Image (tube, rainbow, N blue to C red; front, side):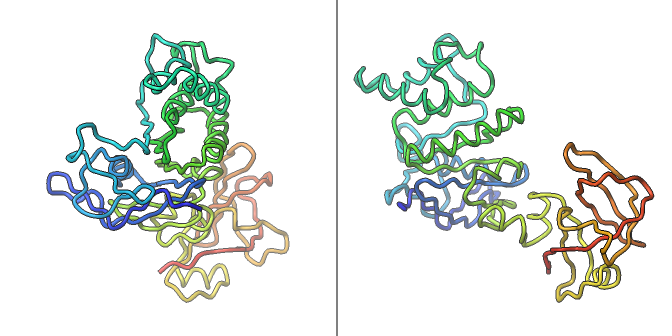
Length: 326
């Protein structure tokens, strides 16, 4: 596949403070990269650097093999092949969704404009509500309009800043599928920023985790989830319990080489044949599963199960998988 974006050893400082440090990444056509990190980790700043809205201190930024010029070298910041959709990307309130998209193509001939807008309306499932004003449209429809507008003049790279943050569960899942369909249909690349791992699964091909302006881990989302490098990556990607080397052997019968292990709740199996006995000390229903805390003498483990348990109940468990941490 064609390499769309290349970032190499990128650095950026603001008022003497390093915000982005030595970041390198690549994104190919048809691929979606998720940027995950806690608030202040540099996610949105990195997106603005890639979009050409900020001047990097050093490093290489290229799109399709051509440099992305910083705003200091341009009359109007940005790059024609890169489009960014922000959380606060406002639509024009007094014109229809169709007209909002068409506005981006106002300098193109009418035939191309109509053809392109009709294609984007269909691609984003807005064709049936195209004549609505934004204020009469749902959050999901407004978000899809902003994305369609960004795609209007056929960019190579789409940047999305927290695209799912204002959406309910149903619209979030729908938009995930639509983004994947759009990236495939338009044959472009996409990077999106989020602080919620649930936004990543089902949409991103690759995941980069940011910590204090650096990429601390990157890879396929499921690989990062199953094999986090440290507790930081583990905490951003899901629930877990840390067990010391001594307790792993004493309470779980696990011999490990490192100082501690990380156990995800779904990797603990409740079974009558389980080799370890535990007591249920807390219960929380999370819809289709129960989250419970088990106690084995001084050790406490978080577990996800579909079994109907009760406080004080004794259960037998097996730890099926775990990750060794340094």
